[in-house]
Length: 591
Image: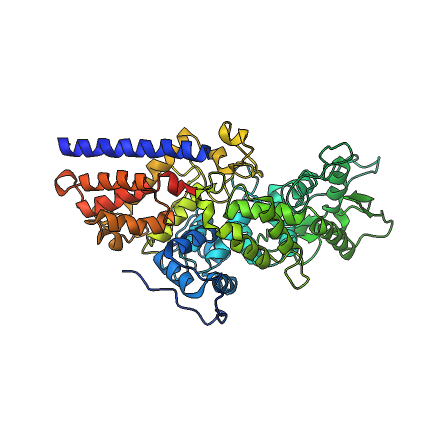
């Protein structure tokens, strides 16, 4: 390595270190196609209101950062052409490009000639295939958000068939724009959730002293989590998301042990979908139908008293039937759906996943009202809730860009999706073989459906010790942010940014399934660092690059000359710019 190369590399190392330090201080302190053409399935466009107009590329990119896996030039152009409201309407009508279940059954993408995905890798290949290439971007992003609320995982799990994860992802995608009540039922009856939270083959209590299983009680796992994590939370709250107080000014619990026990009885008798209610079907001996909802088996459903959340289902001496068992479950899920906590509890979760970690109480209230009534007397309309989340004045307010208490840390897997979309990364086979992303040393430290527990990768209310905790501000994603994960992320992205270059793939004789980025537009600007940074500022940073960061990176790029690098200086400048920008605080902290 010559002196000039060494000097440049030291500058790069210094810059990267400085950017990571700035991230911690900043966040803890405060040849491509044209615009996407409408399809035959796209609804007709409505006239744009003044408020619906997207005035510039930066605001378009910011909206797409909140609502998709990231902006690219085509998506920005489409949004600016039709406006926020029309874009949402179009997205609500967009079909998916595939189903995860079909991908797993084929062991490859649609039209594959060599369909050689492994059982364990196919669901994640399918996830990234749709996240990167799907035109139904809002559906894909919302499905990911739902997977972090209604959590199942391949980690610490008894799920023994990876097709289960494909079926679960499809279920979330189908419900992304439906009704919360249907989502709640489908989550409850999904076999993968049944396995993960152990309410599949959940038998009724045994009160017969002569029985060999005398004293058996229903499993309470799902009964507890469906209340605590999925619907009502631990404490009674109002529509602002604020905790209610009793006469002694104490927080009021939403449920107690008796409620868990009563709801657990309701959840007995669910198992595999099949043609009958025989024991063989119950135990899955006739086939495990992961992509079909669990059905009730009356012989295993409790006929005893069921008391929960102020509801009483009396014991019956009549012979239990499937219709009676289904009616019990319906009453329980209706009760949860109608609970006054749900609008603010769920709405706040969606805001945190898509927009900001610390929404104002008024923002939460407005989203809760949309949940309670979509304007046509319908409760739980996901389309209305998503419109409220993404079009709220607080979400669109440019003043929030300078508010140190507003925004969120981008999750590592969202950053990866942003990169895949911004630079049209894909393989010639259509496969995305980037598994094991959850490794914090060699990967991103996070991956879809690989959370360590039902509590997701982090608590939605987590706050790191220091200024944020002292200020009472949440920063959930910081629960998986530490020295190891930061270093692992930087190393992972450095490798991928370089390894996805067409020249690198060719030089290393990579396989056909190697993913390749299209940097052609960036390379064309590489000899004009200002224009290159202008483009990347929109694609990666929503136009929020600071003058200080721009000056540091521009200085680094100008030091890269043809004599100092093995690869052409234009490619090297592009790689370096992307790498450094994706390590900067303006990128990592979404505003």
